[in-house]
Image 1 (spheres, rainbow, N blue to C red):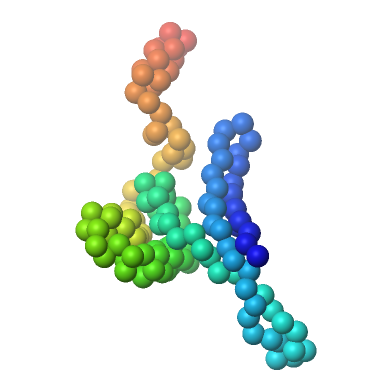
Image 2: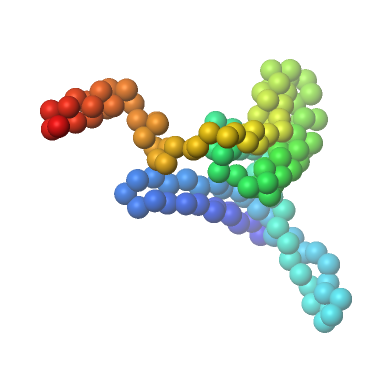
Length: 134
């Protein structure tokens, strides 16, 4: 049997993100306590996470490790399949390279990161309106 694992986060009225993995349900070991059969999941979708969408400043060390372990697994599985395509192999290696945490800085983080990502035309208009009001 196959199923889809789709953890996600949705901010009402704003945006949503989801990571989707297809998984195979397989039998595994029996319980040592009551001899009941257990099931486990094998991930069958092997794609690296899009690095440009990862805000490393928000990750814990456990999350870094999980992402890096996932990328190692993907590289181990896909590299042999891409051995005859150097461009694809290079792309895979760049996308599964170890994700390094941001170095600790002594500067204060901005209170609202969204403000930094506002486009320049919007910022100019906002400043103009502030100037008119005050």
